[in-house]
Length: 402
Image (tube, rainbow, N blue to C red; front, side):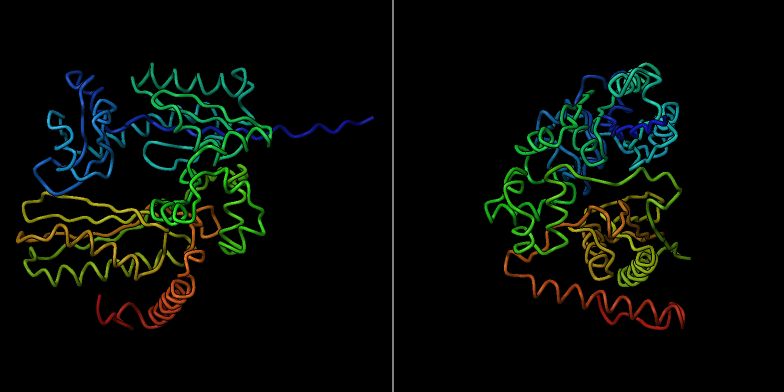
């Protein structure tokens, strides 16, 4: 007699380093420990906070906040510049620890990753014991802390890792009814793909918590939101996510940059150069059928001082028009009389169009026809331009304005 064993339930961890950049600064410089450390632009310059220590967060400081505003909230904070190379070195050390527990590791960014421990967690006594072992190793070897979410899929694991920071360990139940109860009281923004703007639009319709989505049928959701968004909302409201760990080497970002032969003092030339870079990035992004969540601007002045600025996109996009709008908004903020040596543009937070980054479309707000028509025109224009450039080269067509 042959018995067929049921396959084990998949178990994912989402490991998120706590206040990573600030924590590295505090670890490397013991004088900073226990103090409000703010990493990013200095308070007397234009720019934003990259991250900050938990001591600074008590005063309302948070990432992406203008540094000048952070200074008003926390004038006694210690402001330090980003040491990108150093953070990358430590990130590799963290990744090496993950790979001791499972070969199935999917880094999301410099300070977070998914781990599929389904086949290896029994070696350390189960899912919780494995998560605790990872936390302990990070603490003992790197003198840093991490928060971990344990769940049956990636969406729930990522959501859980943010619930008890810092140094938290949150386990999501496996029973479907318990999962629904776990999610119901959470704000609608906890659904992956719902940004600030989308949440505000939903709030205008009286929808603020996941439980309100759970109370609706999928047919009701489809009538209000459209089929694609309704399916996304319905599945995430009940904690459904079938995505697997992605371990193959794929680009996590796309970028291009240009160094001027002589330092450029003509701002229009800088703008035209940036426009060309954005269109190159968009032309590389669309064939991969991915969208970008974040745009990045890089400027290097004649004195070799280099700055980088970024802006999140809500919803994610691969359309040239929206990439241009975001890129030029960042450039306008940095306009000065300084000669420019280099300008660069890039996108990150890349995900498949079929992934769960579907955001609320404006169907239910009476703007669907206008927005959908605009999106369709932009997609058609991009497709036509891409086809012309593929046949005749990058000079085959030029944008008339920006």
